[in-house]
Image 1: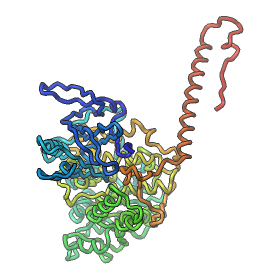
Image 2 (image 1 turned 90 degrees about the vertical axis):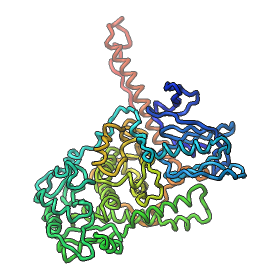
Image 3 (image 1 turned 45 degrees about the horizontal axis):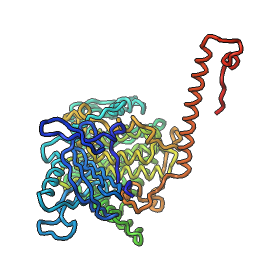
Image 4 (image 1 turned 60 degrees about the vertical axis):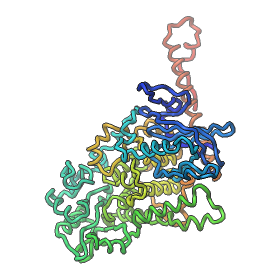
Length: 603
């Protein structure tokens, strides 16, 4: 049962090393306890506490707080409980009870986490033990509020592969067959002067000059102009992404923007209309006119057709996930489970995002039209739709490295506001910018992998480790809001990439049933009866819920693969031994090595 409460974030080579505590003379001294640590991780304090376990009741333990994690080990002989919580996962720390609290275990700390769990610790009232722990936790869980660096800048881990080299935009566009006669690569944004939230390298229509791009930028929210994300290898229709046009209440028009969208349409002579998918509900798009935004009207954009996809905004998604947490942690109410899940609307939102992505993919795959996708600013719902559509259309993105490239390209380089949406190192847990947009995308990917179990090279553990390190601040991959901010902070020089961890141990994250297929388009069924709550993620902390165990066929397949590897290894050893015998000078005419020139082993 305790294992369900354990989350491992340790480098394999470092799991059993003890944490070093800086002593008063500045020398690190090894603690005898086998507490895992990372290079660059130091112990700040340790304390005896009572962990109020929501499943097993109060458990006496010792908590160790480092500059990276909170680590609790049970001191009770009948409990092997271990908690391993990166401080980046913590959303809020509250004091529980006061000086006059008299109830048992009523005085301590309440900790709310971003990964669907809460922690509660009871402490002794005397000796300021709570105050010390509260101050240390607050300081290191929210380093930005205390002028401290995020742990990623202190992490000294070394891996045998460099994850920062996974994504090279020029190579990725070249893989897609770009540039070509209709599309060119521009470095107009090299210094992030055109758009400070876009990447330095952009792909735009060949016929559009850099001056044209500057004029279009004035009419798009945050200067996020329409740029290419993906081109179909055969029919040459494209997926283009951008932000909303700045139409406003007066219904402003911009001839340069209208002409630019026509130029995009004309990059493919086979299509008569450009399809625009606005991710928002139409009511919201109209309301955005009041704040200077809006959408492309038929009378201004004659050769375009507009569809609204009814995906709700970041605030609706945040409240929906809160409701999911309420029904899964700490207790799952079995008797009202279906109605409780329905009341969260979480799967409804998943359905709408998948449905929108299917429409984008179908339009492009059929060759009927090129597609332009936007929401308000083009960094939340837009990223969900473009990346999911590309995952459906392009089998390359279903490999481990292909998926990493997809995340780097459509999410990280194109300015999804990870720092604002996750709140890395920030104590303001009520910030209205927080929202689980990227989690929702990963959930959609998981839903697809359930429906197409042989189509993805990666397994469920791959998706979970990405989400765990979305919050942990151990790696630099998801830090900051955009590429320009990461360059200013020299993230690739000063931090380690999450892809380094994953790609140095790929076997752990491989799907044994993966069958590589070229040019197969995946259309998941996005109806409610085919979607399910991701139990192994959302309810993984509850030991009473029987998690979806690995498929027995999958387990047996893995065993057979291990057996095959063992036999191959033994065969190679036999062949090496035999070749060594053959190369030895003959000792007698009847030596076995002369009589058996080659060993043939049938596998």
